[in-house]
Amino acid sequence: MLDRFISWFEIEPASALLPYDGWAMSKFVDLGALTPPRRTRQVLCHACGDQHPRQLPLWADPEVTCGTCGSKQVELISDHMSVQIRLPWLPSTFARLLSGPTAVPMELIPERLWRLTTTTTSAGRAPVYLLRSGWHIDQLGIKAVLGQEESARQILITSSLLLNDQISTSHRIVIPMDEAIRIETEGIQLNHRRLGTVVTAPLPLWFTLEPPYNRLILGGETLVLRRKQKRFMRLLKEKHAIGFPSFDWRELAEECKYSRQITSLSQIFSDEVRRFIDSGHGHVWIRKEAVPRVIDAPPNNVELQDDQSQID
Ligand SMILES: [Zn+2]
Image (tube, rainbow, N blue to C red; front, side, top):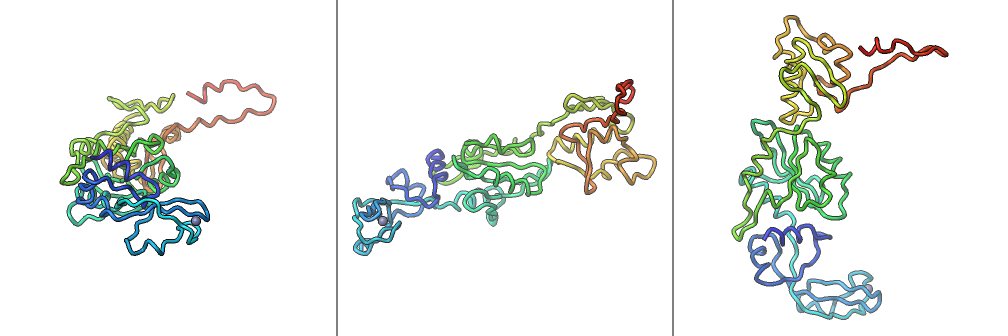
């Protein structure tokens, strides 16, 4: 049932009339996923040539005008039943399954993107989003909206995997709807195992820091860690691994139990270390790539010599 539903869910425009095919669609009408079937006529306009279906009660036939140009020179050429997708049904039902009977989804982009819930697990806060996918979607707009959402990790359930590789990041896990839910005659069923795995799985990291935590490898560069730097970086790695893009550096410093009061990161990290980490608004994070070393420009007409000593 899910495949059929997804094809309707993605159809553009979302209000398009779907020919009612009887028994197979009636289950979705009963669930509330589709509107009840209505009598529909195909309107052919002799003025502009347009042809489009229109839901019409019997008495309205003589008064029909073209929906495109308004002309009365129309011919009604077929009589059938049609339904429409009820777009809010899926996000509403999904939100209630994830967060209880009173949960209401937040529509972030009309008819496109919803925040279904904010689940809190031992791994942190992980909001779940639903994306109505398709061939012609504004990926930049979607990425911008998701980027504004504050969260360490995002779970994005998409109706299908069209173009989704460009939306996933190390902090945004994209899973196709057919892995997250099933639709049965009695309604939506969650795939708890798949969702649970995604919510609690460690995230892929962009750096290497393994026991005994004395070397941080980022891109092609290696940073040697000494004394309490090792513990600090290990704690920071653990925060990144469960989805925090950054973390309160004072909390980390406190856990490292420095003997003196630490009021600034520069007290514990040299400029060399700062090439690998960055900070702002009280938070610290491991950079995506190391900042290149600054090498003083040589004076004019003088060969750069002994630059190796500055690198070491
Ligand atoms: Zn017309």
